[in-house]
Image (cartoon, rainbow, N blue to C red):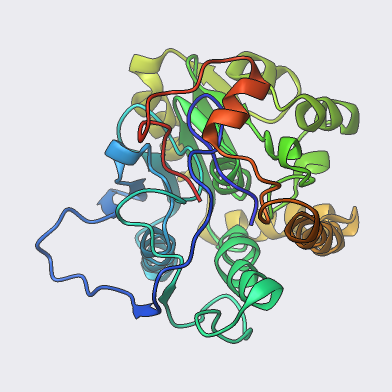
Length: 320
């Protein structure tokens, strides 16, 4: 579990495990963590935790899966847009908000690994991340309809994973991308698509420095399709989605599969497996040689290493 980060590219809180518990039921009394709407042939799936910069807890992960399944099953939907409410697309996986639920049980969907809740050590971490990180991203990448990410503000670590499983990315001029987990001795996020979404030397610089990549730079290196003014992001994404939706549904599904298969023949699928193993080797190494599986890093230390002052207590963001 590489830590995720605030919009400055820094993790907020170290991991911890509370008592085992069931996922809380959705009784309709709160705003949904994911909103699903449909307008004509375009379904929009919106992460809806803006107060936590759309940090992804497990409840959000499974709600995203519900929404993607609904879009796949609806014959009237031709294209899906993935968006984030508020100022930021997503600052990563939740490791510190009041809704953090890493200890909660959710029924398996992405694979057949057993539940993590009653396990310990590397087994606990590997079982959970195989399901909710690598497994879910692979599952969503195979959705047989085009998915367009509409990205503003922070797209950091786990946020990258969500954007990268989408087929197209439209970014606002204020968007930025970062994966600074190498500072913790971890080689990158669990869905390690870096050398496929950007050239290898750019990927190395991206990882070796942990620096932000601007939307313009992401467009230059081919990671982003379009960069637009912030106030035009929704309209431009919608325009692109509607243009794509003019194509035959089966043609779109087969074209998507053809490109995905080409990426897999270039090693993406096996590369994800191999780096996922290295990711967990890094956690195990940290657990033996440092204070914790994150290498003893906390938000203050990460901000210091990044050359920025630490925030006041409790204001460091909310991530995995």
